[in-house]
Amino acid sequence: MKETIKKSVYQIVGNSLCVEADDGLKVSAIVSEFIKNKQPIDLSFLNVQMLTSAFLNTAIGILYRDFSENDIKEYLSVSDIDATDAVLLKRVVSTAKIFYSDPDRIRNSLKEVLEESK
Image (cartoon, rainbow, N blue to C red; front, side):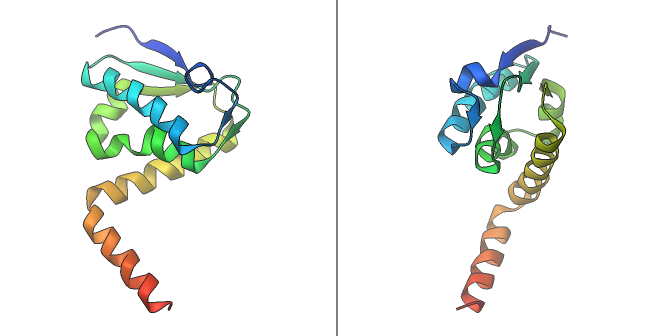
């Protein structure tokens, strides 16, 4: 197996505030290339001061649209993430797995709920 390459989220984004979905897309683009090439990547969250679900949805969650859970588990690891942010990441991953398993069903359910609340 290939050696794991460590990439800094801080360096990819350019600052310690990982809050914008657009910044998350920068991260997912890099991670996607690693997974496509079957190259293990370790995302380091060292020096990240603020992390939001919007960022994590586009950085990590969206990977479940394009890759199997097994491929993501095999080629992506995270490090240097604090406990609170790790809980947020786990929630984002759980939601992404559910959503991307049947996105049309989820969209229809949301549409129904939103129409009922009018």
